[in-house]
Image (cartoon, rainbow, N blue to C red):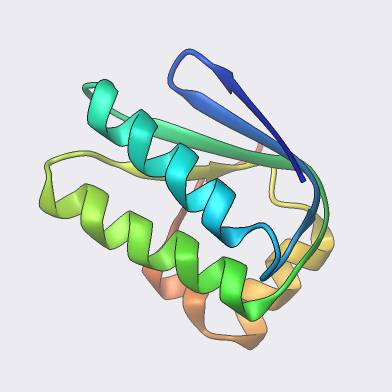
Length: 99
């Protein structure tokens, strides 16, 4: 899992699974703590995702909302969208609409 920060956007690439959740969690909460306004997690480079990773995003979304922020998922690929749908976590996260 590669994690890059570009302003208020966290860009993830590779496999986002249980092995990388701690690293991604740390990066998300650091960004939320240091940035006012919306935070975007760009998943366009993510090859695969598992339930643990999606739960992390759902919890981070809830925590961001409590602090008055928005956490938005961008570039959700087919596998990510399928897992969000199958796990019913789609209702708990904000996915950016595509044109």
